[in-house]
Each structure stands twice: as structure tokens, then as C-alpha cells.
Length: 116
Image: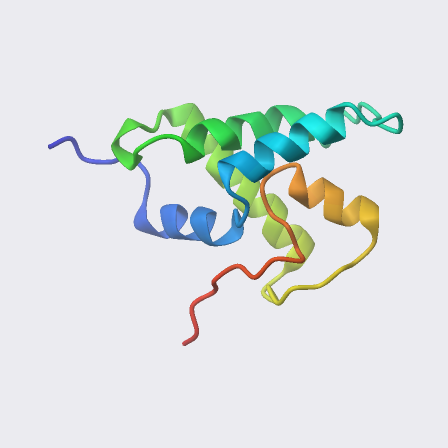
């Protein structure tokens, strides 16, 4: 059995923060990309990163590449930067919510956070 290159901590954190299914994220990316108000923001690169998240969600842990692991790190950092430790469902403004949704985190959905 091949040993996974991704740490348990990153695996768990990514799957905690990415609370949209691959189907929901694919649908969102398609809808968002077709919006009349879509702007290409290089620093966000939401659609590209979101597509990478969809691919990761469809993989087994043992099949993750170094690029996948890097993407998982980027997504967890981005979501934590925007959300902090409080992962309770919150509306926020539409731009903020849509930016998070473009990487698989819907702030209106519960994350399934573990209680300690």
C-alpha cells in the first residue's frame, strides 16, 4: 500500500473547510463564469483554483499529487484567512461569499466542525 504524501492535518482541514460537494462547486463555477458581472481578478483566480478543488474531491488520498497538496494548502490558508476560527454559518456580503464559494467553501453551510 502506497503511503500518502498529504498529512492527516491537511487532509482533515481541507475536508472540513471545503463544505461544498464537487457537484455543487462545479455548478457554482459554471454559474459564476457565465455571470455578466464576472471580472477576471488575477489575485483571486477563483475559477482555476475551484476547478482544481473539484479534481481533488474526486481523488483518493493515495492518488494526490504534489500540485494537489499545494492546492489544498492554498485553499485552507485562503478560507482560514477569510473565516478565522469561527466557522459558524454566516451570510457576509455577496462578493465575500462568492469568493469563498469559488474555492469550495460556502459560509452559509455548516462545516461539520468537530467540537472539542
